[in-house]
Amino acid sequence: MRKKLQILLREGASELGLELDEGKEKAFEVYLKEIKKENKKVNLTSLTDNREIIIKHFLDSLSCAKACDFGVKLKVVDIGTGAGFPGLPLKIAYPEIELTLLDSSKKKTSFLSKTIECLNLKGISVVCCRAEDYGINSNNRGAFDLVLARAVAPLSVLVEYALPLLKLGGLFIAQKSRGLDKEIGEGRMAAKAVGGQIEEAREVKVPFLEAKRYLVLVKKISPSPKKYPRRPGIPAKRPLGKEFFVETKERKREE
Image 1 (cartoon, helix red, strand yellow):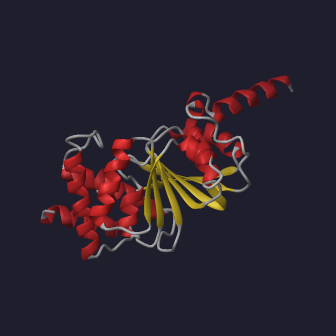
Image 2 (tube, helix red, strand yellow):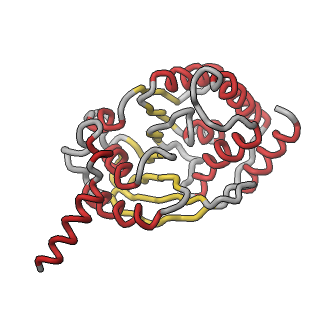
């Protein structure tokens, strides 16, 4: 990694409260090279500029540390991880976490498996599976301390994927950019249906990025009904938030 890019990563991480040692900086360098190489064959990211990848992918992923203490042994799953965001940058920075990277694309999970081998990371697994199928499996339900999702789906859909995977008291962090008002309204109702509660939408400053970023924090407060998540494709077609929102409005009119 060129010196300017190394400084960019180091200073950006420092602004987020992280100090990257030489080994972690080297791991990010390898990760960047693997992304650039694989992106010629598989559409991992629309970004091709090294600086943009560091800011909009690496540092943006690391901003999750503003909402949770990753310095302890957490069991974490990143749903719809794609090229590994935000989970893999967090694993590099915080090797203590036990991480599962979940994605339905075989090409992307193959890339992740190869990259993890290159990085020689331990305590990390890659699963090629739909989020709905993964969440309905009894072995995965209530198994995680933390669920992550970045640029995957609307909040009302994401909570149906995420909440069944969490232990009681666990946390779901959804990374969002803009247009949150409607998502939060529908997301609150959807979260309630699957045993969760939206705690806050926390604005975070990603170093060297002008665009606004938010971490939506959803806490698991009660068991998720066994019927959630619904079969593949249904959460996206019929989001719980919209259904509940319409039902609530109709009920109020009747009253």
